[in-house]
Amino acid sequence: MHNKVKNEDEIVCEVYHHLKRHGKKVAMYVPFLSRCIDLVLQEEDKVISIEFKLHDWKKGIEQAKHHLLGVDESYICLPERKLSKNLVDTLKRNRIGLFLYVENKQNSLQLEIKPKFSHQKWIVAQEWLKKAFNRFLQGEQNEESQTLDKIWYT
Image: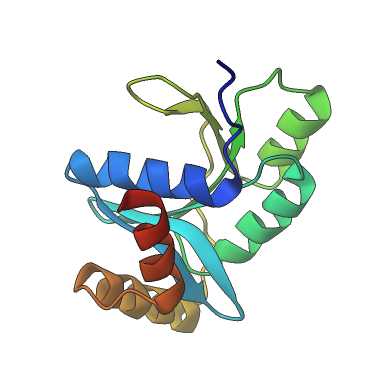
């Protein structure tokens, strides 16, 4: 039997539920400036963003760089793969971290590259993101994430 390849939204939902089950403060599809961040989590005093991509890692890095205006650390997450020198160099140059999504593993996120702490935060953007994140944690999810949750987990 052949396993169906997961799409980006399915991976985001799976990782969200995995982190939630492990007691993490996590939210998906959090509005930020003119976009949405796929996953935002809070660990101690750090706010972390994760942008998921199946193929277009360059676009993911551009989005993750945008997130640095409001988060302490920004990552992209790609399906498990061999890392090219170009990808690694681009991530390090832009201070972005990398998780690999490993299907059928207990911990589906495998840390490959640790990001550098963001010193380019804009205080207004940071406050907007914290408010949106806290609304999600209080159960006021945006319509898109409620719909996706119903599709994948009911």
